[in-house]
Amino acid sequence: MYRTSSVILAIALAASPAAAQEKPSAEQLKQEAFAVVDANADLMGRYSDAIFSYSEIGFQEFKTIALVTEALAKAGFKVEKGVAGMPTAYRATYGSGGPVIGLMSDFDGVPGASQKPAALAHDPVVPGAPGHGEGHNTHQPTLIGAALAFKALKDKYNFPGTLVVYGGPAEELLASRGYMTNAGLFKGVDAMMDVHIGTAFGASYGLNNFANVTVQWSFRGKQAHGARPWQGRSALDAVELMDTGVNLMREHGYDPADARVHYVIPDGGKQPNVVPYEATVWYYIRAKSPEIVSDVLDWVRDIAQGAALSTKTRVSERVLSGSWPVNGNRLLAELVVKNITRIGMPNWSKDDIAFARAVQKSMGAPVEGLPTKVDPLSSDRQGSSTSDAGDISWNVPYVRMYIPAKPDGALAGHHWSAALGPATPIAHKGIAVGSKALIASVVDLITEPAALAAIKADFQKQLAAYPAWKTLIPPGSTPPIHLNKEDMARYRPALARYEYDPRSKQTYLQFMGAAYPPAEPATAIGKASNEPQPAASKSSIDWDWEK
Image (cartoon, rainbow, N blue to C red; front, side, top):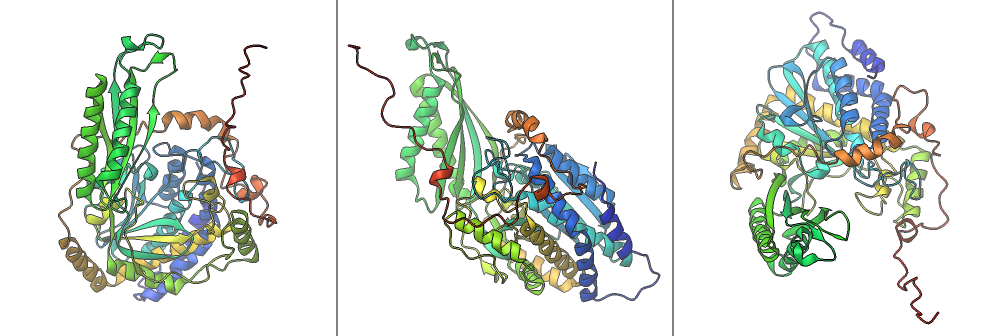
């Protein structure tokens, strides 16, 4: 679909099969790899912008995957699409023999987060549409940049080792990488490096995020006329009763620092004068440990049964997915951070800094510009956010690296304001340094067998401190690939006119008519003027019966 001429050129320049070359040092390999990354940096930024423009949400990332897998296939990677029963999941391999190093990331957007790039006020590309309100569009280009550099080195020097690149869809649904783990896609991998967008550049180790499970309960009752509700059995009543019970459980069941439970009602009936005979509620259950997740889940199941009994309805359950918390390996994190420190932060331009300041001022955040130093290695304090990558970290030595691809200052995550930066030159520069950190770490893992052996030994000690891993996904479960299908179909036609072709002579910002940097606002926009306002409390109906 997309030509990758600059990628192929960079590989050809780096990979002339010179005969009997002396064994290069790790430093030489890194320098040559960095040159390949630099040669392809503009294209990787354009790939990221294209993915941003597709605005695809979980399990509907078909254009994203077409772009990514074609780029890898044209570069010579063996690409397997539709792995683990998910059409938008893939695995791409280059090389042979050991060690086997994995690169992983996700790429889905956020419902309702449509936003024009670099705009300081809420200005959706398509009102109500999804968008990249977190910045996952930057992830796969970061992997591709490193993968192409690996291929260039491998072709030139023919050193042993295999690189495996993975794409896990639907991270915002917490829904893919548990299934990928259960399908055995990570067996034989010696070390895994995951990538996530951030406002800084670094990595950490230890427990990060909560374990999680996502479950839908569907109630079935009896339809009836709204004027004769006693003739029906309301499935919506059952959902509301269940939600009330769970909300009461929150007060007495678990410390909020240990567990979080939240829900939406994707189906609550069709119209008010029809007693709903079916309704569905969807829960995310997050907790510090898989044991607590299981305890909370059992309690919520009891509440669901109680709600069904109370309303004389029937209830069924579907576990959509589940994952243990991320548990990063210390020695692997140290190796990655050593390379991050060596590479350093991007060279921010005056426009980059002005843009960051404008975003921060607009959002009422501290006006700090962009960071100039990498983050030191840290041991994570387990937070309540979640990821579906956790299961990988209990099966393979794992580290998550965060790249500096957006300015700090968004009003919130999973929000339109978080989409202001991931399709700008800031993001492009974050992708480039991220690719360099990945390929430098791959070089170390391949050329230093003792370092990789120490990481694998440390990983076994790490696992010994916890119960043995076992999946939270019940046997026989299948990935919920139906999710978001209707929403994406609703918005695709309107979004299509804004899709960016990475071969374009224009940059994405030029294509969208966006100024960079935008004018710094005189005052903060603040949340109030950008969010829906509550309706007036007084009724607009005149109840004077004498008129």
